[in-house]
Every structure is written in structure tokens, then in C-alpha cells.
Image (cartoon, rainbow over all chains, first blue to last red; front, side):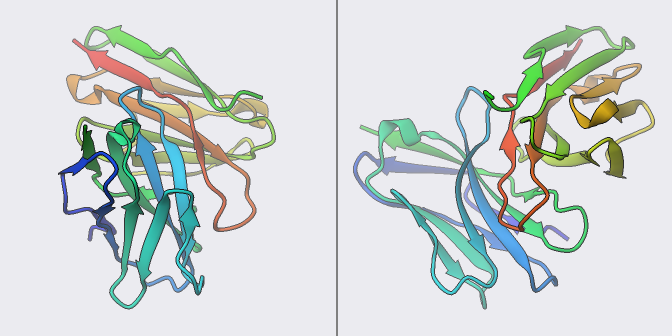
Length: 115
Length: 115
């Protein structure tokens, strides 16, 4: 069963507007963490934001916020005031407390910011 | 410390040849992960080390693949008798073994092309 699902292969957004990238997950572990990474065309994975399963508040990091809906098992990334440099692949990932603690990634969303 | 370093950045090899990649993690990180990423997909877990011990290998890691982490520092990933299906980006990541929310830091990857 796929543990992380990103249903938007590609998204377009106008510069300075906000955009939401969807992510749903599946786990039976009550303790887990959700991550978003950005991958520019250069290839490196850049950590953006983290949400823990027991966190009461949605995580925020600058222009990034995470809309965490635990009952729906969704962890959508919101980017406010999009910039041209935000154009990249975005990956949602999960780490479960049990086991190896390696990240399980979704298939990603390619975001293109248009001027 | 400048982060996770991977070498080479690019490798083109003929089918049937052996290749070896190197990963130098962040020095105080005791966990090291290898992932494989094919075009248009998210990274897939291959194997991970805690210090020098290889604790888990994915079913993706056929017997042509071997990874080592001598002395718990740098790691190598070797692919023997390469096949065209091995063409991918190979990513290395490192982290500390502390909290669930500990982010993994990624290298820039080694892009392998098997011709």
C-alpha cells in the first residue's frame, strides 16, 4: 500500500500568489513525523518544514505552512507569496517511529511559478 | 562542515561494468541512508547504516548492490554488472539518531547513466 500520496503531478501559480500542494498519508503507527522537501533542478533535497503526529498546532516556517488534518491523514503544504525561485519539485515524506526511521516519499509535485 | 558530499556527481558506464559511489555524511551524524530516485518519482529507500552497522536493506537492493560504511564515517555503494534499469539518481542522506523530527540532510546525488 502506498504510504504517501501526492495527487498533483504539476501545479502552476502566479508570482506573489499562494499555492497549496496536497499530501495524504497512511500509517498505523501513532507516532510519526511528516516532512516536506524541495528539490530544485540541481538535484539536492532541501528540507522545508516538519509536522509531528502529536503536534497540536500546524507548523510554520517563514512562507511555508503545513495544513495538518490528522483525522483525514492529510498534510498539505501551503506556500504564500510565491517567488520564481520556488519553481521546483516538492516531496512529502513520512517517518514512522517504529522501524528504521528512513523517510518514505511521495511521487512529488512539480511547481512552476509564473511571472 | 559543508554538509553531505557525494562523488562523483555524474557517472556514465557501459552495461555490465561495476561502479562505486561515495558519500561523506555530516561528521557528527551516526545514521546514513541511501536512496534511489528515478525520473519523475520520489526517492526510494535502499539501505541504512547506524554507525558502521548496516541495519536494513530494501528489497530493491538486489545482490548486485553492496554498501559499506567502514569505521562509521563515509559510505560506498557499489553496483556490480550494471544494467540499464540501474540508471537513476543515487542520493545519500545523514541524520542524528535522536528525535523523530530530526531532519535528514541530503547530498546532491550521483546521477548514473548505464548505456
